[in-house]
Image 1 (cartoon, one colour):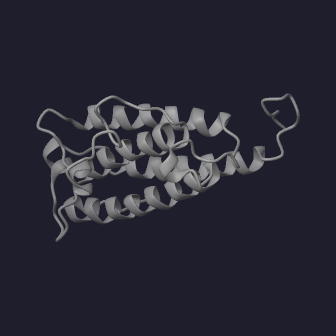
Image 2: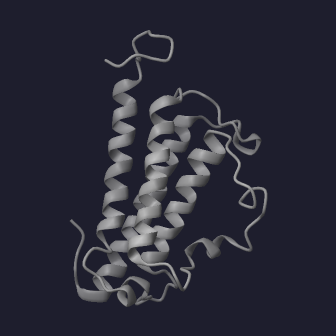
Image 3: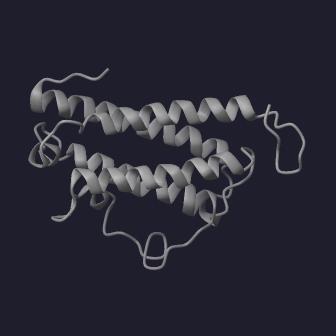
Length: 169
């Protein structure tokens, strides 16, 4: 059993490990959908939706950062949300001309590492530090991200199958 910050045994260590495992599994499923694709295919929108695989990963990276670093940990990033409101929710799905599979996946992995460190060190019952979500806990954010990442991994499965017939695991 791991210990808490005060040296006492951490009674939530199994729960924390389960939250992390479920979240990591969904993150990996999302990343797996772009493996072996060309840059053009990763940007393709082959369904009636305007979503692309690369856009889903980009969106997920942005919200990993926002949920864990901004909302949970209270970190602010100059010129970024919530200081500067984005033009619209859908803008997080838009892939820039210079973004690539490698750069978007690397950013997602960087945000995942930061999120995992926060999930490892913050008390699951601690309230979010961002005032707009202070009524929610770290546990709630972890569960929410599992739900959202799983939803996007499902979208990615459909998009990938539409591109080349490849089906999820």
